[in-house]
Amino acid sequence: DAGVIQSPRHEVTEMGQEVTLRCKPISGHNSLFWYRQTMMRGLELLIYFNNNVPIDDSGMPEDRFSAKMPNASFSTLKIQPSEPRDSAVYFCASRRTGIQYSPLHFGNGTRLTVT
Amino acid sequence: GESVGLHLPTLSVQEGDNSIINCAYSNSASDYFIWYKQESGKGPQFIIDIRSNMDKRQGQRVTVLLNKTVKHLSLQIAATQPGDSAVYFCAETGGSNFGNEKLTFGTGTRLTIIP
Image (cartoon, rainbow over all chains, first blue to last red; front, top):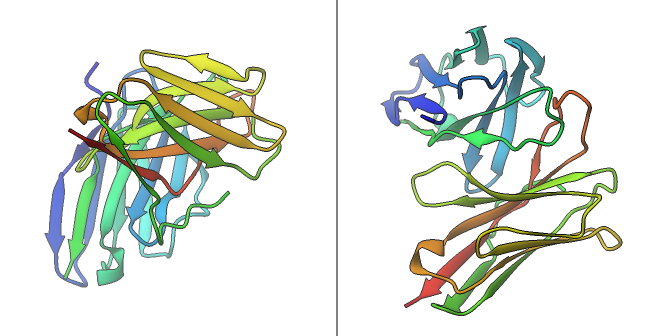
């Protein structure tokens, strides 16, 4: 089991640039979640998908943020244009739907720094 | 409850001793609870879960206790080891038939094992 795979592990970019974060969920998991973690706000849910369809994007902070899931094995989170306040660790997580009580499994995150 | 990461509670325990980490939740409708461990530079890692129809569940060196009356959850770690040093999060959710529920994370507790 390879776990949830995220790339890149670290991203440093300048304000105004476009940033794309990538995630490969665990095979067989068809719910995918994007979280953001900061010291001030802890873990925040940004958006989640079920069977590649966005279910709830109420946590997406602004229109600058967008997420896609073109197939069951890949998702992206894009920030355009990026701002310094977007600096955080972004986690992707997945779980198996159809099983009522199953935990989320997290990747190791992408640490984003916007200067 | 909502996660507000302004201040992380800390707990220091001598190696070999037992530790107890506590968590209060606010949603009386929550029926599934999970403990995660997060080491530096990594994503939250699933430790143990419990459903609301149980009040205790044991794993390897870990025990989760659930008190629904006072909406309190605890994680007991027996015979602590240096590798147990991490931030521990509780998470709660109201279950749904298709597993689309969102997790609400606690603020986390930093556990330090003293050699």
